[in-house]
Image (tube, rainbow, N blue to C red; front, side):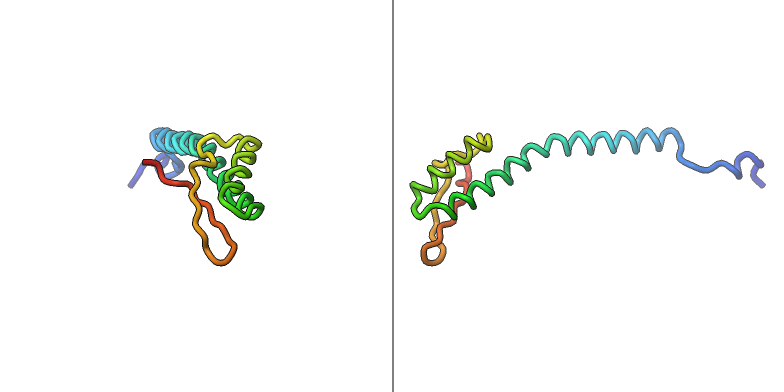
Length: 100
């Protein structure tokens, strides 16, 4: 039979609490590092969609994208980094060119 004081003890040990807290801190740090990159990714996607809706040819799409990039502080992609592909009659889709 266990002693009476052991039977009533419940909860997390200090080691478990420290390990869980450390894991939570690591997850928060990684999320904080990834957040700016995700924001810029979605800003680039919005700028590409806006440029393709407003322009009819590749030169205008690049110009509109560059203007939008200045306004939204997009620095990782420029209008010259985009390539044009025609999909359907009169529709232009723009995608960032992979590096290399």
